[in-house]
Length: 232
Image (cartoon, rainbow, N blue to C red; front, side, top):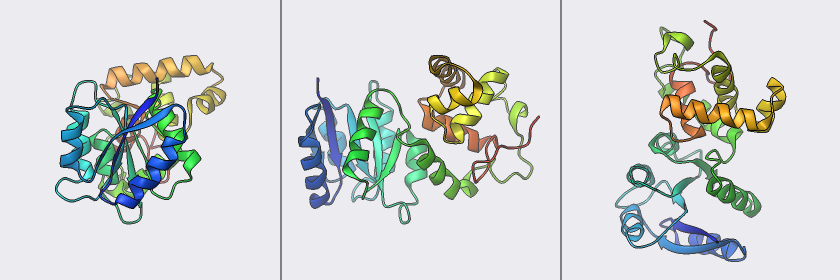
């Protein structure tokens, strides 16, 4: 079955370009388009969608609020934020709202296609290192990232539910490592790492790996620049 994609962007030319790229793929189809968040939410009422490519800055309803409303729905499609990075300071908020990752609007077509397939298959973080760079940029917004007066590690009730190994895995996820890289670092099988990540998501009641990264920054487990917070 093809991956059903919705394009949400107020620029028609951009939607046309993305549609042409996706239409050339045997495993993808564009099933809906919208020029703003209001149109997107309306389209989702009658169209089955697997992945939404979401612009951030749009009229009527922006991508952050639209993402939040989409992700509140049961069985919601995955959302990939499309951003210009330097201008769109709403991208971090969109990740917190539930987006599975983000891409630059000028991303090479092959990277966009890889991202869509990855998100559809359950890998919420499109590019862990890219997600980390965005979080580094907006780290001052986070309550635990400044390092002053913030409780870290076991002092935070959110992290107290995790075993030592799960905390170790969480730290590496937040530093931008893939499951394969974490497996090599900890001398574990990739399947074991995937199991640990699943348990982390369950215990912390998080949606996906992006949310793991966000919490790691919010709790001070990881600081701006990807460094670990002080050990406890």
